[in-house]
Image 1: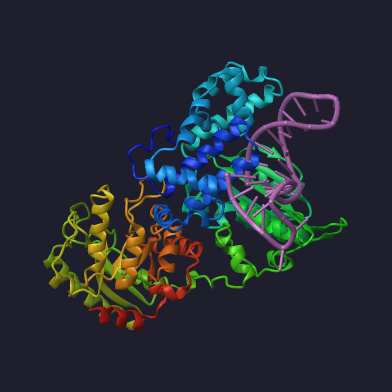
Image 2: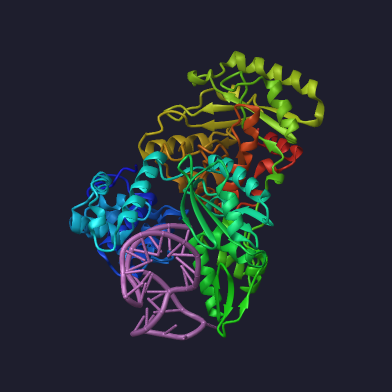
Length: 588
DNA sequence: GCCGTTTTCGGCCCGACTGTTTTCAGTCG
């Protein structure tokens, strides 16, 4: 269960984009429970989303007086951001929490409970928490309410159980893909299914996924649904209609299956892929040309229909080039498409090298040779072995003697494997708590590639940890920064860094910022990677492989890069070996 | 609360599904 943020939470804390977004999200939830006009609620929700996905620090935008340039931020909301940033508090929000218990927001995470029901549970039954709700449902008190009955109460109890089972709102993208790939493969083999695809946030490669969305093309939806229900992963039906089946898997994950006729597959896939905000933008566009767009197709004002077999057709009718799913977040992709300036996104095939990997010389689980052979088999042109430096004891970091021995070992392996794959000796060197490097300049200068990393003292105050990382970036021997913020998806917040300063300095010194492809890290994030690129930074997509099997994690880093609008030219491990080698040598 | 090649006021995407209802509200995506 998520920790509730209550009035006063912000006092004394640095207020960043995420916190501002969180406050507006909570305001939206509370206003909705209060019964405010829905468009006012949506305005706060939109502002929350844009602030959350803003590449720049909200504080910098505020200092420059540019708040109202943010889409969805007008006079009222910019005033509230101003108050938050000046005082760390927001009177409007605090007053709201005295009118509506903020713990009611937790109820909105229960399936089949929305703002209306949450308000009634509170006003009519005195329920303010999930525990209250469960007790009331078990005591049969929910069904006493007008408009509620036995079945509603049962559904809510089931939703409460599912919520407990999941523990968290969302699962990591690799876990989601594993489950979804199996399901969609089975779905595709069912009788009568012509096409089957993953849709939703997973198709957009979001870093976490709340539920699975699958879509099938078939002229016999009912039979397909019946067959799907017999798959072993499925635990129970949550809902079922003519085009949509909603189920829960044994692991608690909700899964939607849409089945549409092949002739409607384009609009159906587009609809099911989302995001909701992107879909709203497309429907507005359609409306302006006198069309109404839904999952079933376009409808003209005279009631006649236009159906689309594929997505390209949907976008074409709207006067747009096809927009890759990873861009569909209403972060400017519709405008870019209208002006025909969509990026030519990087693909996994563009990646020809891996520049961050570990062997059993430090905390990797395989030998140098196993790693090199695996990279070769994976089709890479080059691999950098970048084991840990001496001070990282838990990872068996290399002291200088062992580092030099490793050089010998790498040379021998290069001899053994031939020129088909080139092996670089790099290091993942610790940035010590005071900003010094874990090796002397002399030692660093012997290496082909120096990656600098923060692993310790990640909770230092902003000015200290920022200065520490900037010092590393300015070190002439440092070529790359690995997982710059140190965040772990869903479990550890990013370090409190001035990212704008990091990006500007990295761009100035042409130090590469790595997108760590490990699904637990995905660091840089999509938002950060996009901003870094805008500011002229070079990027890399690296797996940080500790085992040959980790090389396949590349795909998740590519997902982040694509969501960040990244083209292959900005990513140095898309460069052929000779170019990378020359570039590194030129840096000295 | 935001926003403007129909508008500075009056709109603001569109439909599926459920449960409890006699015609629809609430939730979800």
